Length: 400
Ligand SMILES: Cc1ncc(COP(=O)(O)O)c(C=O)c1O
Image 1 (cartoon, rainbow, N blue to C red):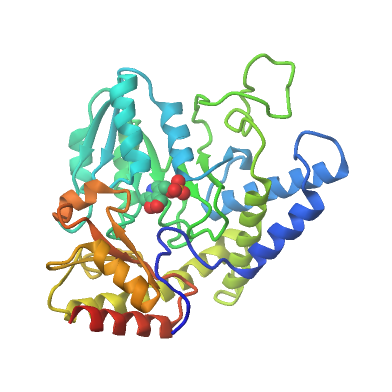
Image 2 (cartoon, rainbow, N blue to C red; image 1 turned 180 degrees about the vertical axis):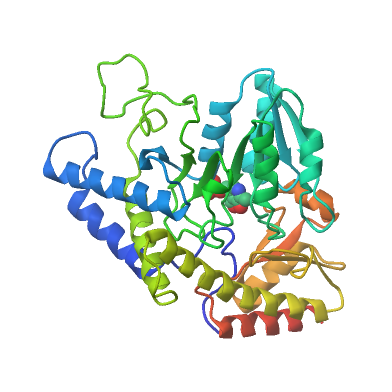
């Protein structure tokens, strides 16, 4: 038995591609100066690395406008706060869903309680999909924003971005898409009608923790929620209104950006092996993403099919219900999710996530709150099929 069988890639992907570790280390050693704050060669080169990462991320998500509208933040939570604070004010109406992670749910609750924003929570169907017509019916004259969880971190169900974005567009409502679970796993093109795309670096984008971002479509204004130094326009008493400085106050995580930079190049190299005819960063990355998704879904399908043979096990939804990412959650009769996760860890060195997964609304939909939530298994691109074999026999031993 190995020391660890990692099946918690929905929490964070691990391990990362080797060049991410090596480039972060080497760049921090050679260019660990404050980018944008001095004119030294090192600082200028650090700034160039950051700009080239903005450009790659912009292309990765099909943002065809100014790369400076790619804003770096701490993580998806930070990005969602910046997006919602920047768009909403007292008297506005916000539509969220019961599938949302606490990064959206708690933020929306605080907006409702503290800032006078009205919030409607739309429920998904019992399989975990949102009905675009229900979102349409929830709209009022005051609706300013719809936040959409592209894929649930509990059920792995993927929402219909095209249908929901056309509803938002028709009413002039901003669509904010939380891609925490899908960036790097499914191809996403902002031109389908996304106004703000939020991402986190440490999951499917294969970067480190502590870096995330948002992309604000060309022409959309966003009020800053943080104020401070930017390295430009220092005499101005207020935050500059040009991007990215309007939304990036204080020193960036340059090592985090370096990790994302190396990961983007890794996507391109992987894509080259899967679509030799591609001729842009986005096309190479899309080829890599298709390959990653296919690999992960092979593992997920094996896990899901095996769980379906175990008598006391109930999965949250089914991989055959509609579009899915490689996230499988289940409950077991007469056992709590925590008990199962502890036994998997202690006896089989298998790492999964048990509980509510920061998304209590999903457990209300599936009736799994009382049982302490569910066990979530999330294989990743670097999961080996022998590791899946080990997981399946551990589950059989434990649960049959
Ligand atoms: C769907 C979803 N949204 C937001 C987040 C928050 O991401 P972060 O912790 O990187 O801010 C997560 C993390 O699990 C998530 O799964």
